[in-house]
Image 1 (cartoon, rainbow, N blue to C red):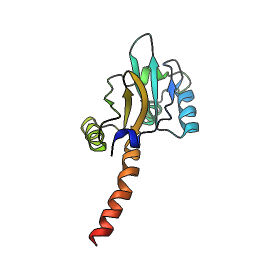
Image 2 (cartoon, one colour):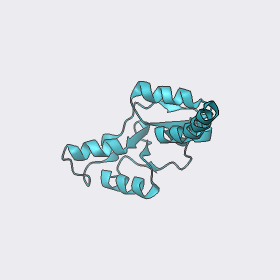
Image 3 (cartoon, helix red, strand yellow):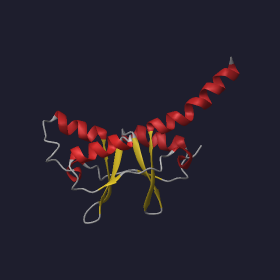
Length: 133
C-alpha cells in the first residue's frame, strides 16, 4: 500500500503568526494532530504538532503569546505519495516523529501519520492472522 492511499488530504495550513492557542483550536476542530506552517517569508514549509504545543505548555509558556513560527519544526522530512507505507514508517521510526508532510511536486498534498499507517495495516494483519489460525 502507498502513502497516497493512507494519507489525509485534509491539510490544516496555518501561518507562523498564529498563536499556539489558535493553532490548538484549529487542530482540535479539524481533529488533526499536526498543522503545516507556511512561512512564505522565511522557511517555507514546516510542521507544528500537538507535541510541540504540549512542550510549550509544559515549559509554562503562554499559548496566547507563543507563535506557531517559534515552535515549528523546519527541518522536515517529506514523503512522496508514491512511497510505500513501509518507507514512511521507516522514516518516522528513524526520525522519531509521528507525522510526515506529503509533497506532490512542491505542494503539500496531505499528511500521513502513524495512526493512518496503523489504520491501513491493522485490517490486513488481522486478516492474515485469521488465515494462519
